[in-house]
Length: 129
Image (cartoon, rainbow, N blue to C red; front, side):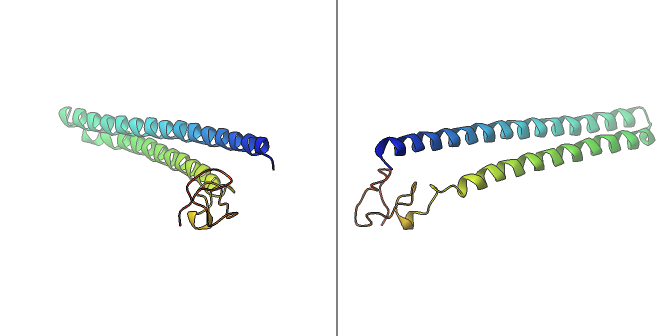
């Protein structure tokens, strides 16, 4: 592989990693939104309970609490799904060919072409010895 092919591949890999980071950020934003929605539901439960106590109508709160609780469980399941998506993206990154351990050469490329060198000849990263 000549220099330009390596450069093209490196840019392509960097673009893919950047896209993954954008996707993870979006998913984390969705998680944050779902968590805020859960907090709002907790507040609504508290307000409904307070109103029921004030109105001396505690029996009316049971149905409302069940509805709020079902919404909270639904949001928690949505958060779990978003977290699974993030884990899948990270797992794909971990399984990428360039994600090698430092023991085999460069942290980025895993090159072991010149183990006695201090810098990886493939990517220019400092080789850990």
